[in-house]
Figure (cartoon, rainbow, N blue to C red):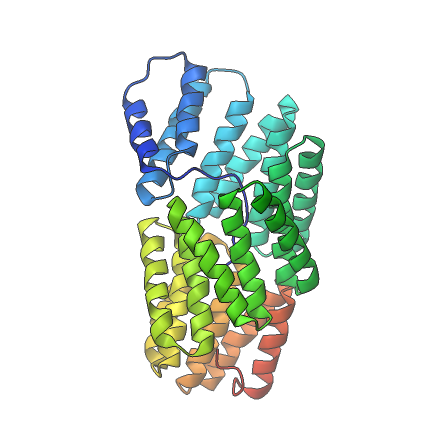
Length: 371
């Protein structure tokens, strides 16, 4: 299942993308003022693939303009914003380097909001890599600083990120508490961006608890908000989760359009991580349709992409699915190897629900769990 970690993101309009493109070719202001204008336009440029390229270009130009000046809060922000675009495209190590630079600048300036944002972003990186202990510590530090600095919205986003960690480790009660508190806070301020993220994550938790109708309702609400805002990244993630839910129901026909749309968005955005996640679902749908041998090709591609993007949990999920396809193809020895590798990954992460699931499959050679 695909969860969405929260961090400040761009706004939705294509008009802003056009405005940014004009600004990139016609600058007349002093460097610091120009850098801020480019950075702020970048954050309002939208969510599409073309917008991502414009944002990266504008952030690079902002950094170049700021290079001759002393460290500033704007420099910390631009470094972090550029890192987040790279993170969302699966360039995890590149993003981490920018986040650490942002944290260093914010720390030097005692720019507390910037420090809180940077710690939150570094928590996202640790979570992706499967180091949930470090992720929790980084999120806790980010929340502490955000609350002291009066950054209420950021504190709410960090709270839902802590909910993701609880969900992965199997503490559903704590995860529900975090998600509901965050959703209530964001609904009260009509923060549709943050609501989209929490509703998706809440849907994942409901799905895992077997509440499929409630999960679908949460996904549908999140998908409506994402499409309204032109948020392609969130739309792709939610479509993946809708597809997984329909596969669980056994409705392959309902799952395929969501898989295709998720893959289309991932390829449009050049997002290795989300492409890997969509290919895992394509492999699962082929296996469930009785085409286990054909399922192995997209699954192997997904495995390579998830390793490049450094997503430990997704890597384990793909290895698990590979095991099911191999078993259905008649290669039980290879299936057990794949499941054992998946179990090792989940044990390193501490993903409680997955550990139990893979152990069960290994105990009966996958005869009971076929999804």
